[in-house]
Amino acid sequence: MRDLISDMKVQLKDFSDDYIDTLAEIIMDAYQDFPEYGEPNIKKAKKYIKWLKNHSTLFKVLFVDDEPAGFVVADANWKSIDGKKVGEIHELALKKKFWGKGLGKFLLETALNHLKEHGVNTYGLWVGTGNKSAIELYKKYGFSPKYNYVKWLRMEKRV
Ligand SMILES: CC(C)(COP(=O)(O)OP(=O)(O)OC[C@H]1O[C@@H](n2cnc3c(N)ncnc32)[C@H](O)[C@@H]1OP(=O)(O)O)[C@@H](O)C(=O)NCCC(=O)NCCS
Image (cartoon, rainbow, N blue to C red; front, side):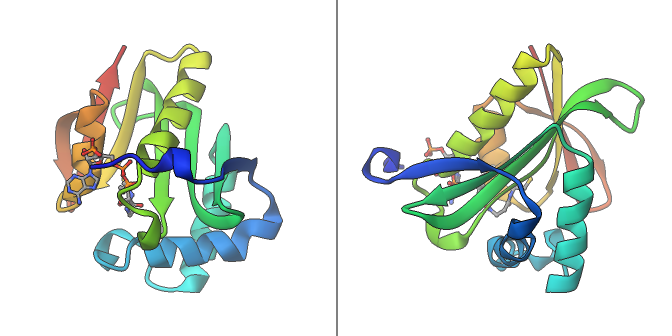
């Protein structure tokens, strides 16, 4: 896949409440092909964004050529369901028109760098079991499948 990032104006901005509506729209757009892994409607998407805001040490909004394109949320102080302290990547989402340009890698690297700076040595995330492109992305960055829970796959990476 060709990496087109160098042809675009790419900016990361810190989350603010002003972005809640925009981020909810990004969620609805990003999960349009697999709604079972997204939120059922804008109202629930906004509630989810607020939950993310309260469970994050990193929340960055991505702008491409000044258009809101996606976001990434991570928490360096998370505990996984088996009680381990992990750096958790809670969300990584891009509007569909921005897929396949290397921006997913860019957001993932942003989260991993943040977690590394916080000194955690295990990184984790949940991904839909049928979300093949996201699973491929995480494998590329050293995440391995650990266990399944309903429709979700737990992936982790140790450094
Ligand atoms: C998952 C997502 C963030 C990937 O973003 P992206 O910008 O399209 O990904 P990139 O262009 O950076 O590609 C990174 C890698 O992902 C994998 N990938 C991306 N699209 C793929 C596809 N259609 N098929 C297989 N692998 C794919 C590849 O390994 C790719 O590496 P390569 O370019 O060296 O082949 C994006 O598709 C998205 O927002 N999806 C909806 C929300 C979502 O599923 N988020 C993950 C929640 S856990």
